[in-house]
Length: 282
Image (cartoon, rainbow, N blue to C red; front, top):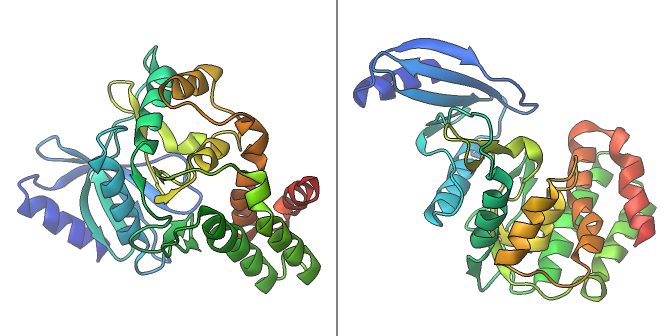
């Protein structure tokens, strides 16, 4: 059904039939394939037959919000349906010499797009985990309830955290006003680890697989350090464009607790030790 929907759309838009389909490397949640059509047009098809019914629609909304800022390139959305998302193929290439500096500057410009409240138009997904985005004026309440609290309670419901451990996460969440400086609600990619930061066909920075919402910019920078930090020139370029509050590096593990809790929920108890180490530290 997905293949027919995609083929019909391509034919209706003058691209002809698919002449090649090449599986994409990576991807632990969804499957990906690079498609080429009779006209030479290239597309990227994401599929997941077990995805929640609205997962790809929510991703498409995030891509649209990021694209509207005209800061960092994201793939254009061609077609979205239950179980699939057809995108522009950015044809990833080697990074240009100034890739990381340009990335830092452009991410800072993305974060300059702000909202009066924290959240997003719809709830969406971080990986395949639901990500609640109900609007809140208070950033501390948003991160405490919709990020740390939600993930901790989800982990407890699945037997991955004890009641005492869940309560410890919630106590930490209640202390956020003492640990985090006030920040505006910036538009975030939301899942900015190295695998979602690519180079387009020209070697320029581009983003894929967002979990977009308006939140703390420092939390986005935290994610860039979770699985191997981005290079120093990235952060220098970011801060030259958008200065950060003193001590920001020391807060990154606190923000990353959200993503580690999510990995606990997605991949199991191998992340339990990292989660509890951060909880004890703060």
